Amino acid sequence: MAHVRTYRPNVRVGNWREDVTLEEDTLKDFLERKERGELMVQKTGFLKENILEQVSLSVSQGGAVCFGDVVMLANVSGDNSCSISIDADLTSLGEGPSPAIQAPCGVSGGRSLQPCTRNAFIISSVDGSAEGEPLRFNQSFALRTSSGFAGGLYLTSDHKTFQKCAKKSRLQEVIMEQQANFLSWWKVLHNDPQERLEHEGLPVPTNSKVIISHCKTNQALAVLGQHILWTLYGKEYEVTAHTFLDSHKAERDINHWLLLTADSAGAGLDRTQTEQAMAGLTVLDRTQTEQAMAGLTVLDRTQTEQAEQAR
Image (cartoon, rainbow, N blue to C red; front, top):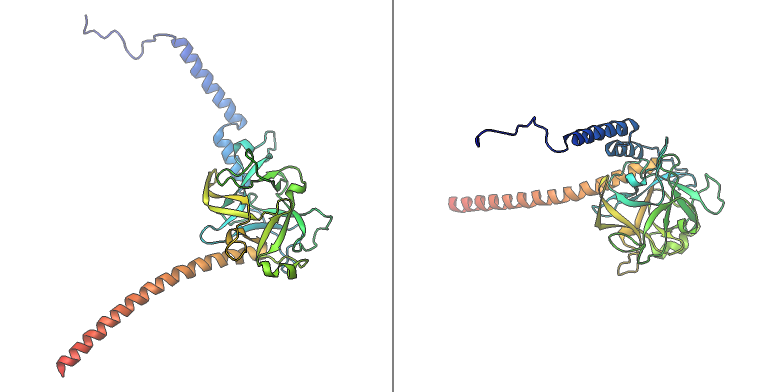
């Protein structure tokens, strides 16, 4: 009888009743969570659908940035073109019938330069300036997200500590907070240190490279292309508040930002694409020119030898 099979797949052994009950309860819990929209895949889809929704940037008045304008902060230094974006994940999503992004929430340098809820900011006044008035150099202001799903959060920074600093670079952290206070005050400076005194008090133009400095710490907003963050939205760069100076005591390109509006966002994107295309064409033309010159040289040499032999 040793060769007789005493066990078959349909034979129930052990705590089979308990296993069946657990499977039924698991399936029932899954269906209930699906009906309530509490599954991770549903939350992820809801978050991306709302935070990546396209928005309309403001149209500049006379080419100047004004209070109340919806702008996009873009950095087009080198190949790491990006815009300041809300780094919201499932832990930042609130609960309720109309969930919104909760503070504190991180920020990162998103590689997408298309205006959406994630990278659109409102120029808010902190000194009582009325909406529609132009923002001037060295004037304090705040950067706020749109109300609704974005939560109306403010771009905030503070001195770094051992427990509060940027994840990768360990520099001064930049996050989104709910309350507007002195930590959320910023000011715009001219990108050329030798011309800042002359431009102080003048309106800030759109689509021009400027320095965005934190009022409390006097550190400039920067994007670090060497520090990569893998977020829910793909490969992005770390954003911090730190002034990087070159040998001439001037801010480097990673501290230069463009305040893009509806009439300048396209120009800024076209400028970036044109510069990249020109760089590619330059290499291509150089290669073709060298090949053509090499070919002509061989051809001329052959013709010269044939002419000498004919003589």
